[in-house]
Image 1 (cartoon, rainbow, N blue to C red):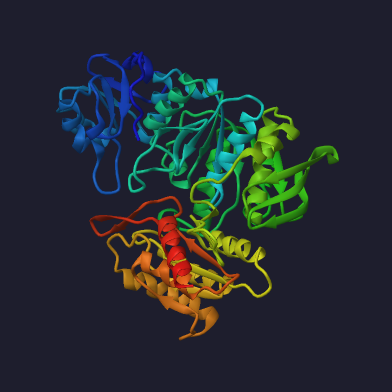
Image 2 (cartoon, rainbow, N blue to C red):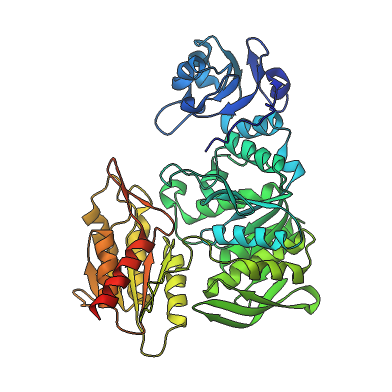
Length: 515
């Protein structure tokens, strides 16, 4: 999302900005630009329009619309030069538009990341929660910490920027990212914790950003439609650490261990963390993880022990919290003060969010888990707090138009981790919803067996939630996975309203009335 213009617009001559990019060639007058955008529909007067090659069309095809809206210049490559020049605007031609956009945007806004401690968090799962935990740890020592990610842009308790999930990017486009960092800087932030997605890193959205700390949480099965294979996905994540002054890496999976080894071999400063007993700079002991929170002791360099209490439940949040504590200490925060900040953080929207409907005889929660690893960890966490006779019931689907190779793996995770599985629709987009559900079902049945009674299929998401609650027995827990905080469902060209927490509350209310 493009931030609103600041009260004092930045003003830079295009020829001066071009000096930041090797191989840049300016054609036309050295105009003074006051903003940047990649979206011709968001152009403001005085903008530099970013026209990059795309998957289907070249951005230069929109240069005329951008110029008509007030763009004074176009940033493009040799392939887009003629279309850009035809607008009559100044044209800055560069070898790599994606790499240049971030550098130019950073220079335009006065290099905002140089005046902030930016903590970039990458990994398959846990990015959002870890960012919120890092911000909480920093705020405990008086640092105003912003957060940029899949829940929008926040500073303190205020939401500065947000947009509907169907338009939101976990890592903003390079011009928007630099403008957002400048907004946070100008609003008094001293640090920013931001999610660095594999797409954002691979597409150069973080170019021009100085990361004081780069954080790696884990690597699972996701986005292989974009990256090709797991190694390509991993290498995209590793790009964060090329621009990070210090690395904090969880070594609880082999990719984290490999990354930490590579960084160490290159002489880069790296702090390792482990919640699962691997040798590391920071580790945990005495973990007690329940449905309503967790406690553990973080043990750091020199054997220093720091008690930590979390309002967040689930063992995976112990790992997220340990990682956040380590990142904060790299920035000079006392571990004890950081732990105080971790304890102060309540729910992260849509992440292990417990839903209550009154005097419920079953527990219910919503979570954003949409990868096999995240679903496995979620169901394990849900089961950990059950009484011996309790069961786990899960409602899940997966999105269309995305990595289809994970669907059967999601089914396997559900079949292995839950006692009752209710398949439903997520965001089918332009795919056949029944075909998506069939792929998930095949994975679940590989674990439970074909025709197994605890496997149900209900296309309508709200009805699926209702069925799960109706099937629950006293002492059970109902888990609704996949959407978390999102309130829309994408079906073809339609954008439908959905609300998993509200659907759970309604179903729990009906259950109380029926009893």
